Length: 140
Picture 1 (tube, helix red, strand yellow):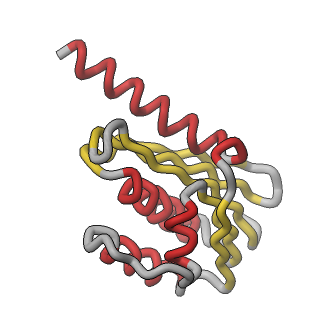
Picture 2: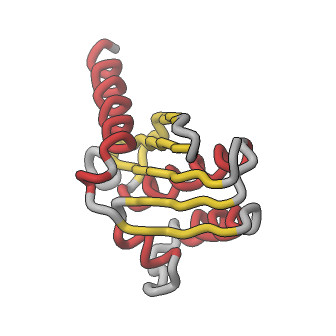
């Protein structure tokens, strides 16, 4: 693995809270892409966004990335992580702390807001997982 990794992460729920999933695309500067996603149960959109980033940072750490650029389509999460907004939701605080602690595993890390249209891979993973979970529930 080379030094720099670009992360696209997304989390979403159907209902807020509701059934939720997370999706992550990690892009290495050598062109290699890693994709991960999972159903996380009942959560809010904001909780899912944070959990997606936690998964992404854990994967980046396992790949021994040194520099990480994180792109999220949650403006709220990015403003929290860049210390522009205070966190008011008590459920988000432990997730923020987990991310904050993970940042120390990297030499450089940035958090940037992007519109959903520029976060297609991660968004597609979330929707694929939620569609699959919805289908499974209907079969039971």
